Amino acid sequence: MIPLKFKSFSKKQLRLLTWWCHGSKDRHFDAIICDGAVRSGKTLCMSISFVLWAFSDFNDSDFAICAKTITSLRRNVIVELVAILKDMGFSCDEKVSKNYIDISYRGHRNRFYLFGGKDEGSASLIQGITLSGIMLDEVALMPRSFVEQALARCSVNGSRFWFNCNPEHPFHWFYVEWIKKSKQKNALYLHFVMEDNPSLSDNILKRYKSLYSGTFYERFVLGKWVSASGTVYPMFNYDTHVYCADKDYSRYYISCDYGTVNPTSMGLWGEADGVWYRISEYYYSSREEKSLKTDEEYYLELEKLAGDRKIEAVIVDPSAASFMECIRRHARFTVKPAKNDVLTGIRRVCDMLRAKKILFHYSCKDIIREFSQYVWEDNKKSDTPKKENDHAMDDMRYFVNTVLTQDEDDFFVISAARP
Image 1: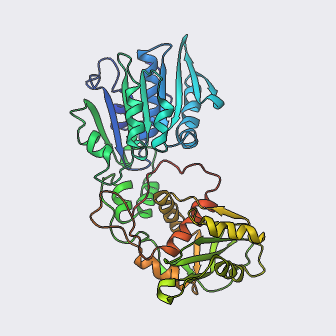
Image 2: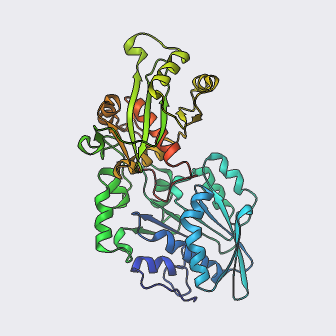
Image 3: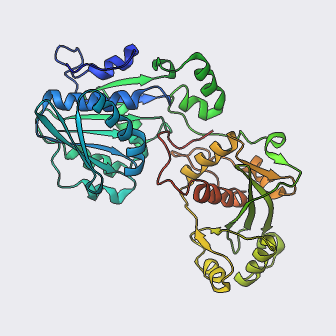
């Protein structure tokens, strides 16, 4: 057994680290599933255990480590894993352009391919390879087609599956097909809570628990697979998030949710001391006003909203092709199609609201109104916001998802947040 240079592990972490060892009561399992709270140490322990198992049972074999994207995989798993392995005496030769790592230890060598399971088309990326084992980090964020194709690649005798994730809704395919059927699948199921990570102090535990409420708390602190309900942004508070006095803004953006029959909403954002303020907004409902506006008329409203400020870019609903072309023709503003991943965007907005990184001028009455009206769908087997009272909510999400996280390909390990 290769020695680990850590101070301590919890009993559950030790079970995860050693379940495959000769003499372990769990060695007969074909797979392991770890779910539960954020910051519970399951990802780090699983990645270390996965590599140690590979070298215990195989030599000169191929394995795969998967996440939603290659970027998130490297950020959340590989960087820390490689550092720990090198400290333990392993040699790691990462071929970044080819997305694999050759790992060696005392004359043994195995190759670990890196895959991103971002969408349905990702399944084709992993076809054709033969694997001795696979680890899927945040498996609940990956499409079923990718996961099933990845598992089908593990045809070597003695191969095993390794899954970890934070909870989603209770009708999620992975919860239904793997967690609830773990005995049928001959999978060891370990449920983690924050207290299973001995590296978290009491103060840090209290801090994490104070960050969340509602479904957030149940999923990411208690680790429960529960449905979203109520308002999408329950952390929004008028006294906390609404301001009156002007600031000394240094940068500006405009975000836009474009509608013809549905309302059009635009927000002017300015940055001051690392905080983004919604300075003013434009909101027009042709249905209520009983009059449609053209792209050119909306462009004039965009000009009024911008005033004489230097706008770095206008972030527009990606489906509004004609309006984006109208903006380009006038050649004043740079226009960017928004990143429109709804659940990821909602999660990011929640993080920014909680951190008080986005605030709203009291005159922005439409977005303030929508905060109390933007709710989750009832009786849905997925997390879906109602398509009502969501136009200012959408333009805010476009801004946060496109501008405030523009250097990321994906966010960190936690799953899409639902309050």
